[in-house]
Image (cartoon, rainbow, N blue to C red):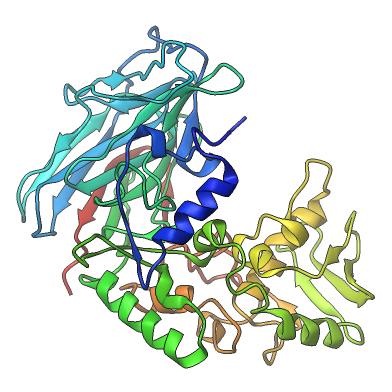
Length: 436
């Protein structure tokens, strides 16, 4: 369904390899350079639902605090309303519903959807006029370009800026986002995510109906340049291309840092043997001793043992073959793919097993029980994700997803940058980072 627009896979790979440098240098293109994947799209209904109301009894107030000090900031809101219709927040405070009008070629959205933020030290406030799912609040230094197109199943599709494509029309813009879902029955769930990339620094606070306030501070000011510097040092230490995770504009300005998972999507051969020796050691150890996975669910603790090329866990409907580096960094392919037919044990083991590989804790003291080790034990042995190690080190409170299962922790500990609750009142986003 999600085909590449005007660009075959081979051509896309060639394009990226030509653009890769130390670091990656962007070269923004046009609609013809878009690469459309599930990572940068939202699907809606075949036709916009214009009958959906633009007001609810308890709208969510958003407050954007400018602590950036750079160029003009603009905010955007994208997502789906309760009917499944694609929505973007217009400058008039109402939902704008993108409609590709049958076009199979991406059409740029030229509606008034860029909400200008006030200057440094000031707050820009607005209400979301309805509940929202798969939502993002984007903030950019400058303006972003969004597109709409008809997907293969006939539904309307929103094409968002892509951090993976150095020729994306918005590639030279410094931007970031907060993800959120806010529903009547489930309340709000919002997070700061570095799973795919680190961009414009943001932190957030949520006030819910009982007056409770939750805060995730995110990265510190100046974190992008510091992260790139440390990745360059790491590349010099182990001769791996960590410095190629950094993305700059043509003038050398740091824009963002892409995750290893996103980097591999454009340079699949990079670091392909990075985990090989570690996997061999893991397989050897757990061929003669149990690896115990605490499912933190009804199944409790399950014992796993290696036999041949497969790790098998008690009560699991299928085993786990040796993972590749792409499996480990993506946590959603190969050994860590979750199928519709998988049982509850398998669905609980996958995130915990992948997190243990990702953080390189399986051979650490106490690593035979997962999860059990505290955060100060993560990323201590090579090979590991030095991207996550460095990004977490620059988080002011140690919270913020750096891979998809960063919420896997021992009971009572939390690495994820999440705020949530019922009857949300105000979501405050600090753009530019919290002051020290």
